[in-house]
Image (cartoon, rainbow, N blue to C red):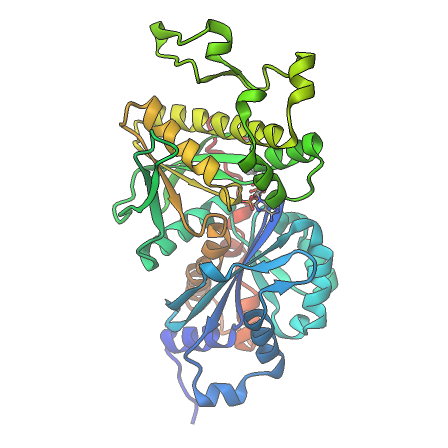
Length: 417
Ligand SMILES: Nc1ncnc2c1ncn2[C@@H]1O[C@H](COP(=O)(O)OP(=O)(O)OP(=O)(O)O)[C@@H](O)[C@H]1O
Ligand SMILES: CC(C)(CO)[C@@H](O)C(=O)NCCC(=O)O
């Protein structure tokens, strides 16, 4: 007797056999990998589970460091999450994009080439490395747009984690200010500032309704690059540590360095930076600054510039919530507090800076989720219009239809800068 499967059964079959589930965001500096580990595996499934799959699961979940630059952010792990009717844990892994060659070798060594035929990927690297994935590990990339997935990831994380969103209480008193949970259940509209290597600024009006309103090349990559040049440091963590011990006032020219005090007429207090790095043309000053001061001044310069552009965007769009994300904010409370201060102070308390715990992982997370909808759409199409594909379920997953797979191929012409 021929078994007739309805749409739901086909979908179930496909999604079950499509394990492991990854979402990948290949950025200009860091590659982010979100891995969904199913925790509801039945004894039957366990029996059928391929050895390679089991090994990959164990390798990823039992370690927290991989190769030279790979790290799993264990503090961000999300447990008991339901995705596509499966329950499990989300793991958050990152490595330097310059390490992509090693990642591909490792994936090959772990047998990924025999197991997964398609990986969902976003970020510029999904385009740049597409051929390497195909040639070296026989993997296709289902490409998704980085800003679409960013928003999807944010909304999902906030829905599944009550303490995802936070703000700084009493942001005007930077020394005393404290982190507090923020109820982001009614998020729209909001300004979204993604501080990665570069910065993208979006106005988000609904889950599928946003525009990229601005951007700046002075972002996290600029901070790290300039810091390496000025201080001789070699890592982001080192740059932040130096900045924590330094004082930008020895490097920058303040309003009081120019006025001798406040510039009252326009509300510019004496302690405000009038000119970033503005003292560094003076020989004596230059010879007395420390690496720590230079790192701090670099951090403050980049952060204040981002804060200023973000505030103008919010003002223009008449939006009062400004959400800052991206890995520039990783282990970086100095910048978060400065941004919170800038939003509050310059708007006279009418704007609020908000932050999210999974700061740099939303693109990868959204990418993992996006495949669900795209797959359903692809399936619908094949069920509606074409004869049943003569393929195994996994091959079905590997071949989303051209129309749906490459939303990232469509140009985003909504930037209005
Ligand atoms: N371990 C790290 N190594 C390098 N940079 C780091 C690290 N941790 C945080 N950063 C900061 O995060 C930035 C990258 O952030 P993110 O991963 O969000 O962007 P990206 O996706 O690489 O860049 P883009 O979106 O512009 O392509 C770096 O420029 C740096 O400022
Ligand atoms: C190019 C991207 C979108 C890559 O993520 C990002 O680095 C960015 O927004 N850079 C700033 C580009 C600009 O000047 O608008």
